Length: 130
Image (cartoon, rainbow, N blue to C red):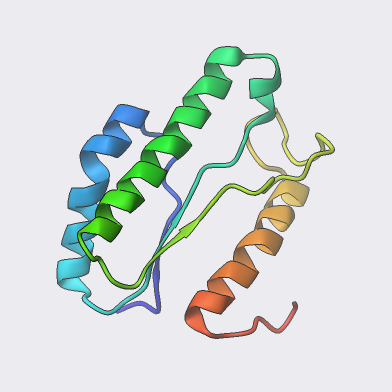
């Protein structure tokens, strides 16, 4: 049992894999846990995309793929399904990663500052450090 399932799995699969696997995975999870909130988070925008156009396009397609799959699930009337869209999770000053891709301590702190209010609202809780 869990208070929620948070799916932050978009950085690694291809857009095709996201499209092929998301609905079945979420439907399986929903069958086993009919009332538990499922929260899906888009992947963060990586700085490497500022100079690697292939990487930029891949992240864009990953985020579009998961957004599309959330819409499919909503049309299937999957209840208690939430979606957190990418919102400058790492900040905009180029200080949030160790290598343009992977968050450093500052990047993770910034991500939490975006995630916690959204998750708190879904779970109807207030985190003590907000």
